[in-house]
Length: 478
Ligand code: KG4
Ligand code: ZN
Image (tube, rainbow, N blue to C red; front, side, top):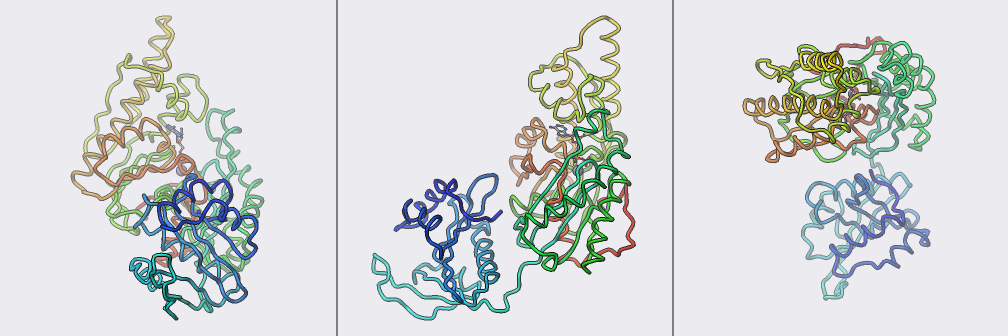
């Protein structure tokens, strides 16, 4: 996310500055730019708290000076410089500037190429401008008529989170608001659909308003409205659909119906660009699927569960162990303290399909047997045994699928992608691939993921009408 630089970013920015320039700006200079220089605004792109790039603009009436742009050493050549420059141009344009100006060393071929690619042209040469005697070019570019990146407002309400987010097509996150009903459902040991729908109804207007306020945009600036069209709980889906359709109708915006699981996959673009073909291991409360993704518009399910989804199995096993809902995080935590003690059967299913109900029943039988014998179950060991069998099955099948469907990258997506042992196993087994493990904050349901996926629908011109039906059991291939 690109945002205004704060003092807390200074240490990281100084490190990049010193790595990048022979004549770096000092701490004092940066502090002055942040705090005292009314003309200047410094922007940073941060991912999970790490500064990736930064840029400085000086606003001087109709002209805007680009006085600095730099990318962290370990993130160069990944498109972050272009992303920052694009953002700075769009921002200056939005502020009403008509020109952008910069100076660049005539011998810095890489920087010249970048600037020329963005329409900057040399207007004069400044002789011996730099300390080492090198010349500089003054480069200029007009900003009038610059189109702003398209913005999407997205709503997610497929299960027990009500969420709204706004993103632009350059993947700048303008806002993301999520409320979870988990505490309420925990009392019942699982999501109660009727309760979920009612709570979505109570929350949705406030959440949308908060997302719009946070993004500091007017509805006029939004280019499309997206929502989760399926799969999910039908009542919950309806609430999001009605929210999205009301906005689309009232503000006359195109409407995009997003597949929830595509959201879990595309949110990873906030971390790095996706490479195709890609294998996605989708592991959530409702799905366990191996999806071969040839490109951003082509999804093919090559394996699926024949009975319980993996997250569902985690939740049910936790319930057998009299642990709270959702069971996934509890078992994840217990298993860390467990050891190999109990024996559980490995599911045997042909091809790339999965089955977890036998494993779940084996846990139930084991608990009953131990209880009947008057033995206390060691929960840590049981969690360990269940998890090792379940997760190794997932990894083994993914490995086999990759032999038949070679891929550049492998991604895990869905709530169970938060599991610490699964993440460990993925790293051990797919070190040779571009492995994408979503940051924990993106594993649970949110609207940012729907917004990220919606950009691909927007690009392909895939819209739905106001009469579109929500689809509780929609396939990712649809
Ligand atoms: O994707 P998600 O938030 O909702 C659906 O779309 O289904 O996934 C929820 C599932 C729940 O079954 C929950 O127990 C599981 O993800 N989960 C985990 C962990 N965190 C959440 N499972 C295993 N380990 C975790 N750390
Ligand atoms: Zn989900």
